[in-house]
Length: 296
Image 1 (cartoon, rainbow, N blue to C red):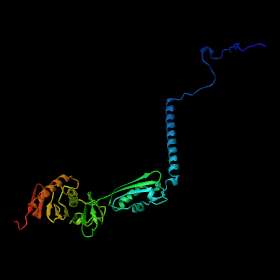
Image 2 (image 1 turned 180 degrees about the horizontal axis):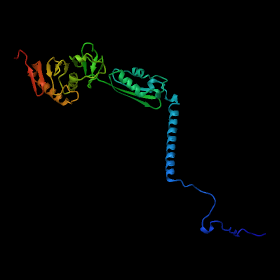
Image 3 (image 1 turned 90 degrees about the horizontal axis):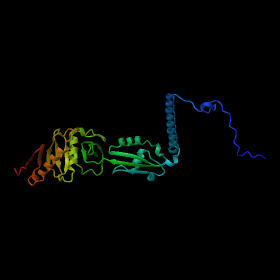
Image 4 (image 1 turned 45 degrees about the vertical axis):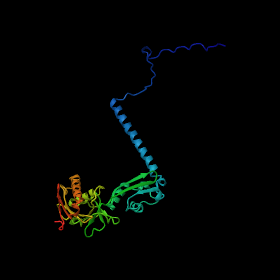
């Protein structure tokens, strides 16, 4: 027996291309594409992958949020709906307006549309937010308008106004509020309207007089005149009051009005001023009083 384990194998004869040092296999390993074609191919593949990712994400979102209906269905109004509101609107009223009831999918509720409808339905809502909380909860927060004065005219019982001059209805707890009256345009006001001109000046003055340091309390503000307000205080003393730019809704005259009113209050609170029943403060920086007949 012959052992050929360590005998080297014969070297095959050189083929074509041996003289150049290259190995020719006869198989083409790649195709060289023009640069423009490569660029267009990269763009196409990028767009295709982006579309696939977006489409796949939407399919997953659709299947998760819309096909899993029982997960997102309101089971119990008290448990699934949280309503934070003010003094007049109740949770039951809000849920009824928004169409919230058991068995409703929270994603079937057009939140922005319902929010707009609720703001249009009642003028005493200042702001409103509706937030979804996974999987089947809604959080509703309502900020109601707070009245600062009543509107007095025939047929306007229960009409009040807030610091922004927006008119709305409120029946309870308004008897102690100052009364704005006298202007004929008040007669045509309806909930949701906004005061302008001399009537809005009265609102600004009422808002300023609510400061804790002001001891005088307004009872009525008559807007029948175009150039001044006739003020009646809780002790039934009166004052004709005006300030520069009071009838301009766009001009900020709050500081001037407040300083002039504070000057009037200081004079009315003096010992000599306490007996004067009528005051004239139509000219800023000049305040006069009419003495009672017994003192004259």
